Length: 135
Image (cartoon, rainbow, N blue to C red; front, side, top):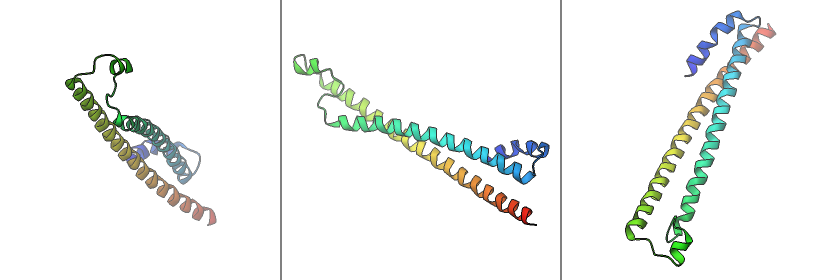
């Protein structure tokens, strides 16, 4: 994905009035900002799913999960099948939340690696630009 984004900006480099190095740095910084925004979105999704999972885990001690109080207090008790079904649904939700968290974490780390690569390129171009200016 990264080489493609840089290649897309190659045309802009030749049409720009600024030095090619400065133009490339500007484009890399734009890509870096875009990756940072994606990473923030992923982090927010991670936090939301983490809270949902935490809520499910907190409810673990309930005797009759997802049952209205009226059914438990004075009404008929749920059948074993209903209880088993509710536990199975809850277990599947927890598994889905865990899988989603793992996937989001992997995406976040991938974006972090791409950001590091871009920062290394920006740093190298910055040193190159400084060398050009000192000559």
